[in-house]
Image 1 (cartoon, rainbow, N blue to C red):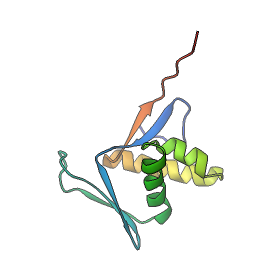
Image 2: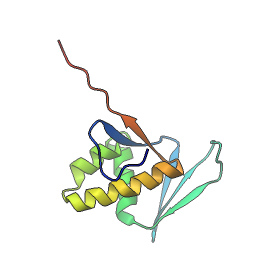
Image 3: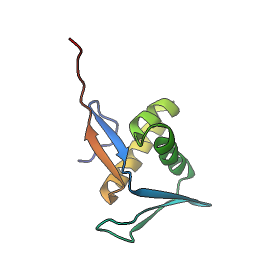
Length: 104
């Protein structure tokens, strides 16, 4: 599933096995103990790396909530969601359906 903006009913979640390392150019994402052992992804955006870290530390990996609470510009949000689509394709982020329950 490819999305260019945050659709209602879905959220992006950083996978728990993803490790993030800050670098001068942005950062590196990697996973150990997975089928794609040793795969690295270089992220050339410090702000995206910071968002990933904030999502992990403050929002239990929920990237959508981190974006909605920390980013005010609609254009910036759209760029971040586009970047997250690429991280979904690379296997670092998952898209999950949001289930809502109603109290009776």
